[in-house]
Length: 185
Image (tube, rainbow, N blue to C red):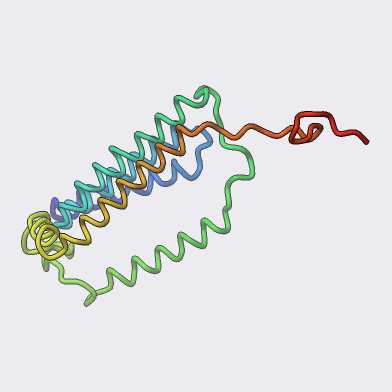
């Protein structure tokens, strides 16, 4: 067993352990820690497979952005000690079905002939890193869609900030009319 195969299995076991922690713990902080472990191990598998761009994006976007935002949201809005997920929130049949579907998809992907692999390790590899190729194509061939997506994200951010700062509508009193006089029966 080579070093890369051993590292792959370590990352795979970390993903499984982190996913089980997310699925079966009732403590939200432990669930977030399991999610961190899973996302970090997925980034490691991306980098090990030669998809360095996807690995770095996984770390920056999902771990650095989404997960940290989730943790801050949980820690700042709730008392974290003793927080548990409500009973009945686990959907075991749906989870088992989705796990089987994911396993079938993964088996179909890793069957021989579906990818070009290193003959010694069996791990799919690319000739060179993906970051430079993606960067060149993004800023030459796909410049207009890249700028349109960045404009869309900017307008979404401005819209979200506007909605967050808007004053909530005042509830109407059903016992008074528009002239603020009581309705007479």
